[in-house]
Image (cartoon, rainbow, N blue to C red; front, side, top):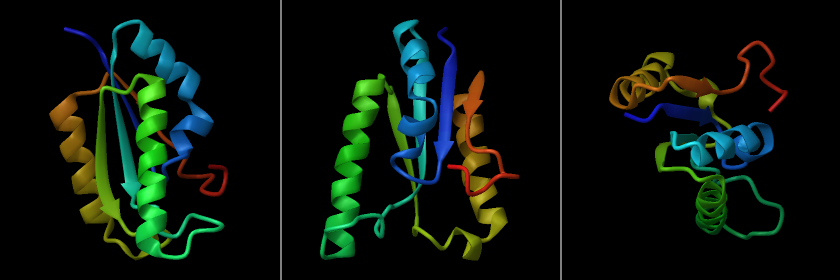
Length: 119
């Protein structure tokens, strides 16, 4: 059975900006790479006029980046962007633990919770 690497990040561009090279190397070596996006990125644009348009554009770019990185599967948690602090930690933890149990990752990539503004 192939090893599983899981990357869990709030936004569509976080994995590409922090660990894409490593994820690509793992994919090339036959690892199953799972990419988890926590938010919907509906507010992350400079020139799009609506939240729906922004979310769609970011999702399309995210899927293309995942394809380039060799990601096997994308998991969308769908929480609203920029209000994760309002989300129950129990609800967020449940979704992440569920995916740990489902995919049983050997390696996990995410941001350091003690430096929340570094990503």
